[in-house]
Amino acid sequence: MNFRDISASAVTLVCVLFIFNALVVHKTVGRHLDASYKLFKYRNLLQTAKEINDIADETIEEFKAKSLFGYHVKRPMLVCNVIYKNLKLTEREKLIVNEKKIRVFLKPLTKVTADIKKQPNATHFLNDLMLLRYKVIDLILTVKYVERHLHNDIPQSSNTKTRQASGPPYQTPSNISLGNKIVSLLQCFRQELFYSARFYQDKVKELKNAKYV
Image (cartoon, rainbow, N blue to C red; front, side):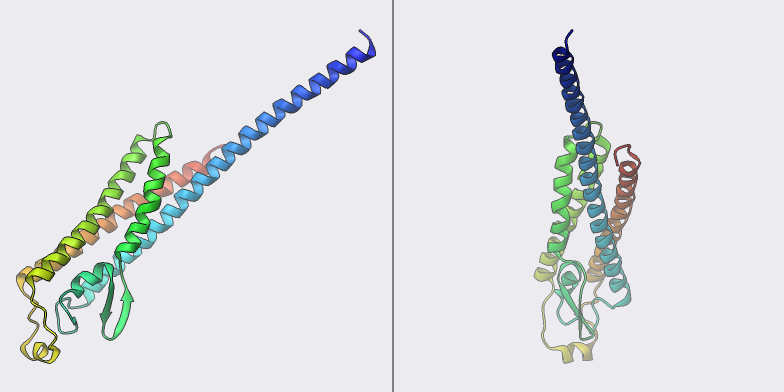
């Protein structure tokens, strides 16, 4: 074997090692980027869940702290606006929960669900995501139903002085029952988000403990 053959063999070996190393690095980097992207998505979803959880908690406290059908409620429709529009109480506006924010929450949830479908052994996680998604949709539909019910069944009056003089006309058993139903719904929604948030946290820990993270 002459010098030229040895050189060619050495070059071939170096090329093979270089290609092998490049493939290993590419696979490792690819796994790292994929894990980092998933971690980002889970963290983002977790943060969104926490935000809506706080908002739901805030809404429940508003229900408890204020006489929902009392003198300060300017119009009966405001019982719905507590849920998903701006509510004006004691001359100050406070954003509680709105349909847009809930739908914004649904968007990343739907995307993550689609991504999870591609992953093996993800049935349990997928089921949890779908359950939460249905819960959010149920909240939106229930709010719309309550709004229509109030709009159709409760007469609206713009005479605030008369209403104050004669007492709160909207504190009927049916109305209070509706208010309690809304509070119960929000409490269930908050509990669902709490358990889902814990589930997301576990997923984030799993990703952090993976070899390539």
